[in-house]
Structures are given as structure tokens and as C-alpha cells.
Image (cartoon, rainbow, N blue to C red; front, side, top):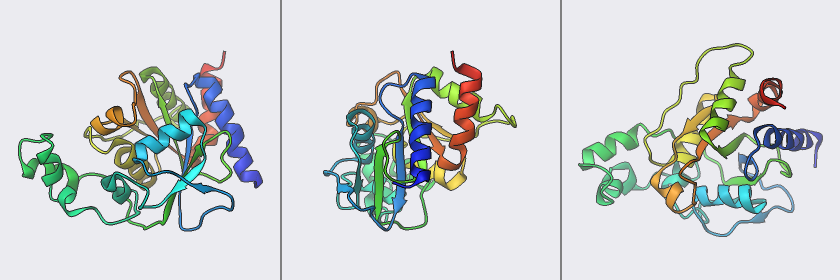
Length: 225
């Protein structure tokens, strides 16, 4: 493990401690190459894989083949968006929208990573053997507020985020965080709350890896007891 990965491990311990997180912050990286020794994960949805790393301590990678939710795989840049998702038919048939047009309008605005990758890497940030592109934190509204406040502590400003209650951990969090290079917050979605068991009182935050060091320093300044 290189020194940069170890630095992020240390930030993971500090982040979990200062916020009092349930489980771990999750390191995520999009790559074409797989680090030696990292095993392939079992087929599941992206949101479920995040929970497996967060609560189960697992470290693994997933290609498009293992991603059970192809819409999620697509917005993360592993494959093309399925036709029935892009057209709005998929969510309309689920009863999530009043019309195909309404569903399509939402899908057209969903964040999507343009660059293609072959795999998504997942691990608890405290033990990740790779350098993350971003970190996912699931926590209470108060913990999400603290992340936002700490991110703004040095230079001020406002957080601009977006969500639609659809494709939250993949589109809202992975794609939008990496596309913008900024902190993002999501209310989660029916899929992540139902399939991945994101709790009713939990929100999701996406943190670009490049912002994590200053963020943790600021969290400790503001909230360490």
C-alpha cells in the first residue's frame, strides 16, 4: 500500500471519529485497472455495494456485469444508459411519474459521467488499499450539516446540490460529485432505501477526495470534543 492510500486511511479514521458515524465512510474509485489482490464483488446494486463496504467492511471491485442496476452502472460511466431508462418508460411503468415525458425529463437531467471506466472500486476508507476518487458518507441530517459547514469553514460560500429521489447514490452522489468536484448531498431514493436499506433518518454526502484533508481538519476544529 502506498503512502497516499495510507494518508486516506488516516483521514477515514478521523472522519468517522469526529462525526461519530455508524459504519465507515466509503472510498470509491473509477478505474480501468484493478489493484493486485482486490477481489471481484458479488452481483448487487451500487447502493448495496456501498452498504457492503460501509457496514460489512468489505473491499472489492465491480464491473458493469456485476452491477445489478444498469441505470446506476451507466451514470457512473461503466456502460450506455439502457434505452427504457433514457426514454422514461422504465420509471413510468414503475408508477414513479405521471407520464413517460415527465420521467424522460428527469432522466435527461440526471448527472452522468462521460468518461468510461471498466470498474468501480469500493472499500471502507479506513482500510482502502487504493487512493479514492471520492468518499461516500451515510449519516444523520446533523452529520450532513456538519460536513457542509466544515467544507465552507475556510472560504465560505454555499453548497449547490441537486436531487430527484431517483438514482441517488450513483447519479446524485458519484456522478455529480465527480463532475463538479464539490460536496454533494442527496435525500436517497426508493431503490437505495428499499434495496440497500438506507435508513429513514439517513442522508448521503459525496466528498471529492481532493477536498477531504481540509474537510477533516475543519470538522475537528469545529466539532471535536
